[in-house]
Image (cartoon, rainbow, N blue to C red; front, side, top):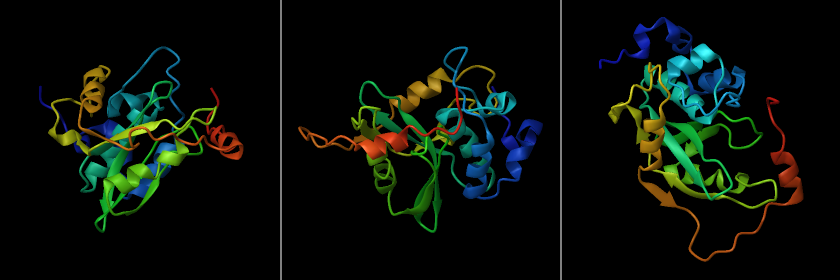
Length: 203
């Protein structure tokens, strides 16, 4: 099935104005968070823009599409957690040989990353101490190698169907562990837990 690029679809016109990662992040911040009130969703860029809301995966796809329009590779980074917490997905970009990330989240943490990181691992690890449950348990366990959407068979731009197969492919792509075996992690402190409960959009 042939896939149109975002440059040829009226749905994507607003993304053409997002000429920098900063502008992409600012746009994502205007979208209400998708709380999946009617069930789990993994919308394509087109469907997420039509819905006018997004969660982290959908936001990462929108960011990847906008970044691709302006010369970046459409790359995802998956942050995998232990049981009891949700994974987080961001869109990667590179500027002057350093990595940054655009992120859609409802919390005060796990957000945009400036392009100051010399490697994807450095960037991924910047999320480690922010990633914890309400009881303070730190949950980040792995991060994926950059996942290039342009090399997949999935119509992540225009599909009318939820992209469960793409999510599965990302989940099964190579991931790098971050916690040494046997290491006991200290819980986040009370003030960190309090700050972590700040949200941008209410359910």
